[in-house]
Length: 338
Image (cartoon, rainbow, N blue to C red; front, top):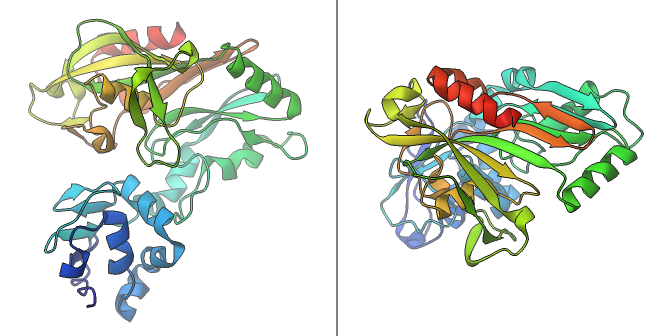
């Protein structure tokens, strides 16, 4: 039995109806079937989309992770079990459409003692990913740091594409060595701003162990991690309602939110996102980790605003902060500056 044919391409994307033979399949597997036999017209319109069928499972998963695959009108995670007759819509690649503006928004924030901090805008990848034609911060390093040693500059950390903020790079071997040592012994201080669902009453720390191996979604274990450098400290900065976010959150005006500051030392994949969700307060808009609200213009609001270690310090406010009340802005800046 063959896959059903895509419906007529629409300006907002391409859509299919899940055939009987794909009933109960994971979404990332079903996409391989749906993309396997495009018509010449469809391939001509979206060649990069249909090439994903040839690039494999990993590339199709990343399409889901960027919230570009809607199942029944809602973003679908790679492991979602689809049902026969469900509508699947694959949206246009927004990163490709805004490639130039993203590259122009990136900037060098600080360079000192063999290290550099660069600003990565939300929607830009830190490094190149399979199946994505979008620009990445890594490809801009040589232009920002032309005086780096041979074999450098190199990225030292990464941020998820929807997360904005500071990404560190080494300009030479000594800078990389200093960063690795500082992380190992707990001398790095990484501070983030986040907008979460709900309004907890007190500052809190999430110590739960994370399983990040070969996973789209980091799994939070029931036991705590004995290493305090793997914990996430959360400071409550300012309570808000959706009506007070300047349109950042699409929800009833009285929906409760909280601007928080998060502090980590080492960091693991999706650490802040997973830890906040485990505490019952996911990032507003973070569908992967169970958010019930949606954000406008951003998948979610998470920003790496300050990083410091001995002999190096960098600071950058998020562009979305100006949409919040003045008191929230002041508390956010005070938290980042420590």
